[in-house]
Image: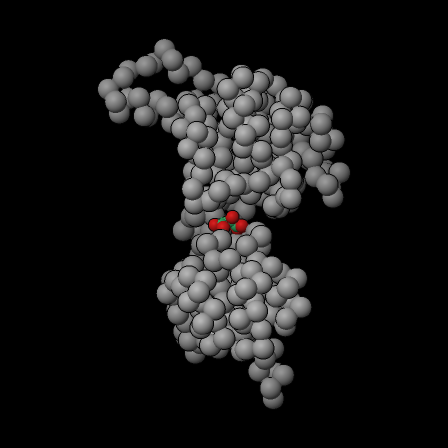
Length: 304
Ligand code: MLT
C-alpha cells in the first residue's frame, strides 16, 4: 500500500512497513497540498497537526484512500463519522501513551509542589531564593482523577505508590476494587490535586462554578484537551487566589497558547508533550504497523 505519514512516524515502524513492501512517505503537506495528492495514497497517518475535516475528506472520497490512522488517542482532529460515511476507515492507537502521560502529570505535580520551575528560572538569573521555595509533599495529599480509563488508572497506581490518597470520578465507571469513586462535585471539594483524563468536550468541564467548589490551595493539571478547562476562569481563579496553581499541557489555541496563562508564576506549562517520549512513540509505531498490516491483509483477502 502507499502510505503518507503526514506528521512523521517512528523510525522502527517505518522500517517494518518498508520490509513488508509498503511504500511510505513522511513529508509534511498543508491542507491545500494534501487535497491535491491525498487520492494517491491508501493510508494517511496523522498526529494532531493535520486536521482531517470535511474539506480533505471530500477530496479523498472515491479515491484509493481507505484508512486514516491517528497516531495517538484523541481523534478530535478528524471528522470520524464523515470519513466513515464516505468509506474511509478511521483508527487510533489508544494503548501506547498512557504511561508517558501519567508520568508527565506526576512531573508537573512535583514541579509545582516544590516550585522547581520558578526556582530554576530565578537561580539562572543569579537569585538564591532558598526561603521562598518551601513546598509541599505529595504524600498524604488527595489526588482527584476525572476520567478513569487507561491514563487515569496508570496514574492512580503511581500516585498511590507515592502515598497519595487517590479518588476518582468517571461518567461510566462508579466502582473499583482499589480506588474510591466520588461524585464529581464531592471529588472537586476533596482534591488537593485535580487531574483530567477525558476526551475533548463541547463545553469546559472545569469552569468558574467548578473552581468555586475546590480548595483555594488546589492544583489543577490538564493533559487531556484544551477546551476541557475554561482558561479564562482558570486565570481568574489563580489571580483571585481561589486556586493554588495549575499545570497545562494542552491549550484551546494550539500552537499559540494564551501568553498570560503561560507566563503566570503559578502555572507550569508544556507544549502538548504527553505522548512525546521515545517509548510511547515506539509503541504507537508498533500499534500503527499492526493496524496497517491488518487492513492490508483484509484487502488482499477481499481481492483474491
Ligand atoms: C493524544 O491524543 O494521543 C495526544 O494528545 C498526543 C498527541 O497528539 O501528541
